[in-house]
Length: 281
Image 1 (spheres, rainbow, N blue to C red):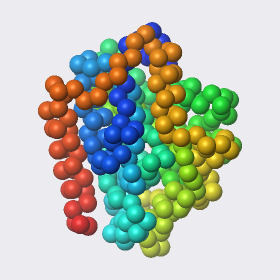
Image 2 (image 1 turned 30 degrees about the horizontal axis):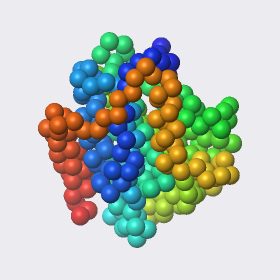
Image 3 (image 1 turned 30 degrees about the vertical axis):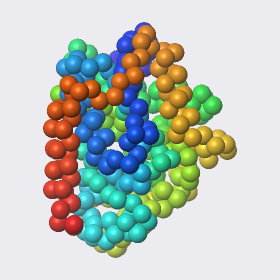
C-alpha cells in the first residue's frame, strides 16, 4: 500500500505552479494539462508532478449535471452570477472555481506499482493534512450531506466541508485532484450551486439523485480558522512542504518538447466539452 512517505520522501518531483498564470485561462486547459501529465508521468517521461492551479469564476460540471432536464436554465443562472460553465473529464458533480479556490493535482505513475482508487484518495488526504498543520487532528474525510459534489472523501472540520477530491486515470498515470476553498465564503459558493440545481431541475423527478444543497455545511479554510489564509500562502507552504520532504524539487512549467502532446489533449478536451454542451449554446 502506497503512502505519502512512499511517494514523497527522498524522491525527485516536479512542481508546476499555475496559481497565477492560469487564472485568466479556461479551466479546460488545466484538465488538458493533467491528461498530458498522466501520459508523461505514467510512462516515466516526466518526474511525478504537483501542479497548483486557479481559475476565475467557473463552475465545472460533471457528466450527470449536463443531463439535468433544464440544464439551459441552470447554466443561465450561473451566468447571471458571473460564472461560465464547462464539463470536466473526471468524476463527480458541479464544483465552483474562483480566485479563492486552490486546485492541486498530484500526478503519479503506477507503471511499476499499482495504486488503487482508495489509496489515491488516501494519499491526497494525507497531503492536505500536512498542508494545514494548524488543523492537525481536525481534518476528517467522510461524505458531507448537503455539500456540492458530495463524496466519501469530502474533507471537513467540525462538519464544515472545505475540499473535495477526484481522480483521473490515463495511460498508467494518475492525477489525484483536490479543490481547496481557501478564501471567501464557502456557503456563498454553495448557494450558487443550489440555485443551479433548482433551476436545472425545476421540481422535476429524475432517475439520478442530484444533491440538495445546504450552503451552511460548507466553509473556507479562512472561515474555519477564523483568520485570513490566502491562496498565495497555501502555494508557498506547499512548495516548502515539498522541499522539506523530497530529495529534489524541479520548478518546471510546460516544456517545449511537451507542447504537441499538450495541444493534442487540449483539442480533445475542448471538442468533448463542445459535444456535451453544444445543444445549449
